[in-house]
Length: 227
Image (cartoon, rainbow, N blue to C red; front, side, top):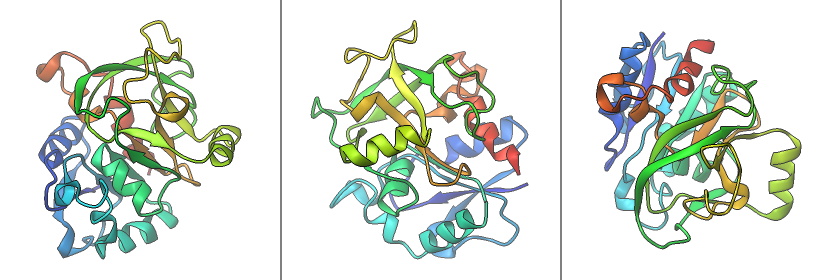
């Protein structure tokens, strides 16, 4: 098993992702986007950062890199693909998932820990948790507000494609617990197929106990073990 962690110009969480995956016993390597996907890849991660300085829109330029055609093809064949923070923005911009992540309601960069409620525990990215379980992960974004049309949002809910919602420590989904104004407090969604998932909070920053004492995010990364 080898997970390709795709680097774009401006990625800055790729090393964190590789370290967290290696800690979990999941082989991972950084792959420069211009080099394309190597042979034998069994998983793909789009890491956080500020690809191309977030010019135009966050993730918009990276989404047009030729490697993303390969990522979409791999995803269509069942390869697990996970986008985190800027990687989630790239995932939406490239059509891997619905919607878009745009400027926080506060119009400022936010770096803090948040609580998430697991909405669907029957996907590779959430199978390590129980439905309704509350976990804590860090966020670090200025454009993390999930937006999608009302009709498409209703479809996401009906198809059980919401993975996580922002909540308080007791699991209550409230406006006060929503750090960025995301529609429906959505923090992460899956694509049409369950092998594709994106989320704004950083699971790789809550997977190493010697980093901040939390391993709440490890279950998300273990989705790569589904292959």
